[in-house]
Length: 532
Image (cartoon, rainbow, N blue to C red; front, side):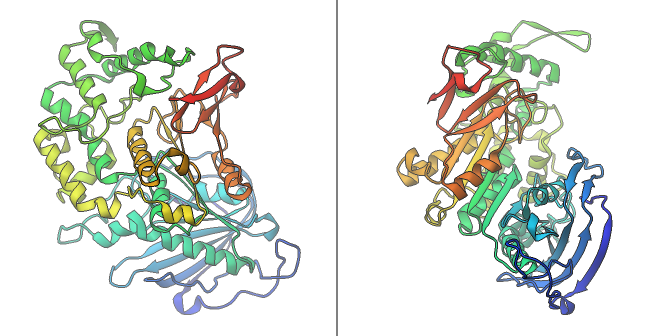
């Protein structure tokens, strides 16, 4: 996604000219004379298996940075007090893959503004990396920042231009780029550019991403355990080969059960579940603290009425049964559980709109599993769904599953993985992340050993990557930095309301926060962590 910025200097250079060294003047972070910080092209070392096609450097003025409309994603607000920076764009190719991968690295122009830290930023949906606000924010905070487009472009929802070859088969090289290969390349390139720009190596390297970016962070910990000392990976879209099919389950249920509930009806089920299960944690705040403790049955709404757009609707048994099936998650025709459904309390407005499938899942099935863009995911039967689910597992788990629980190399390297997932995530089922964590626990022989390097926080009422009715995390990256650089392992994660009037410390998995029964329940000090 492009940004509206003032360009002070732009120099696009072909590979043959990319090996010109920078001018030898400037000041290093410690005040001594060192490498230049002139914003110009530099020699970039190609990661193994790649060739550098070009390097381009563009100087950007400091001040306020604004962004164009980012539809279908939210448009970021302007970012103020951004230091002058240098954007270095490196184009790579993997010989034989017929690809062109863009890696963008943003660096504070003044070496005094650099903290010695490197931050790689993740993507969302089918966007491998955002070249806009995440990079600007990181530079403002003193990082050298990087993102990659994996060679698939900057559109998070449209895969039609890259998913299939002209012959109609999956473009496996580009899928591998998106899934994993380009992430390690970005880490290598980003740190190399920083070293050559400042004349000193990166001291600490971090990953920061949510959703697809969360999956990417887990992938790096699993496959490239020395790339990052700290990984912040939230609402992670891991188990991609399963979740990206499973989130079509509501459409299958609607089709097979022949029901077409309005969003108003579905909202009535969510509201009733929250009302019934909100008090279970001892505080009535409109949030289900632990949805796994909520056993409210959707059938209790049968026969009740709701007013939707001025029309009175009586909740039918068929609609209630459909909601029960959606919450329970997909099963095979014989009743075998396939994956998880959304938690009670999560909005139905994305996965359960009749006739409107979740875009990421719809594209995954049409382009990658069926390799047929005309395939209708809204008319799948229970049997067809199960077949497609299994096919996705067989074909793509090794490529994009991102679910290897053996993190021993990451732990041995001293890496730290900090992750949170909202209990009201409406897109990526929270229990998929819990499932992964439990499998890691089994590999390492228990939760306590895993906590040494991987901590997971489940945030009540928080939606996908933030938002929702729950309290929001306030400084996850700072928490990770303290863990990596100061050895301060987080027992809790600070969360608060938007206005700061309510605060609470989210407890690390598998604990949960509970009100002590004394004092103001809006204050974090009056809650404690207990086994969930």
